[in-house]
Image (spheres, rainbow, N blue to C red):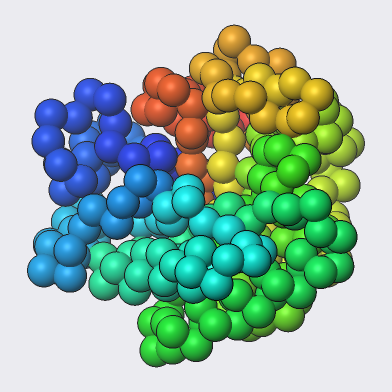
Length: 275
């Protein structure tokens, strides 16, 4: 990746139209990435994908994807387990056809199982996903999750990334902050996260990041809901300083309710950081 790019999670609120118009509007706004939101359905067909690909290339907008929410690779129901694999694999295939480079997803829930069993079940699910998408050049990214009941703390997503060549973490810093009930929210904590990622996965992990940021509210179980950044206690300013200090590259996707406004806020602040 050439730099750290900023964009929206889905079609900007100002867009009057579909994904293709959304990509065009992202560029008009001065942003340069766009996350396809397949969270409720994979809403781009194989027939439509080439046009999405062409538009993104013309506008120099990098595409990522968020796979459907209804995924649980740790389900003891075979139907749910295999459906989850299909949702992620199909999201990856369509995103690849669109010219996208990364698909993220919430991997599953602990379901009252121990962490080791959960990890092994999810690892097996990812192995099957990679087999299904063979030939598609796209990153598969388990995301740091915001609730304690969900699989996906920092160490878990890093460990999965060590297991497979085509897997890297989606680092949702807001989720990590909510999951740890307000920790991981200072300059030095952000710095330690990136040090750990680089130590365990190499410099390539910092040169090809898929990051999520939003304002966020949490309770005793972790994430409750997303907020506008300025209405949240999430310390995005120090995070951006650290990302610039480490010369991170890749995509930073804003998931705040006012997606394009906060994405532009993040980009403007980042560009103003002096090292």
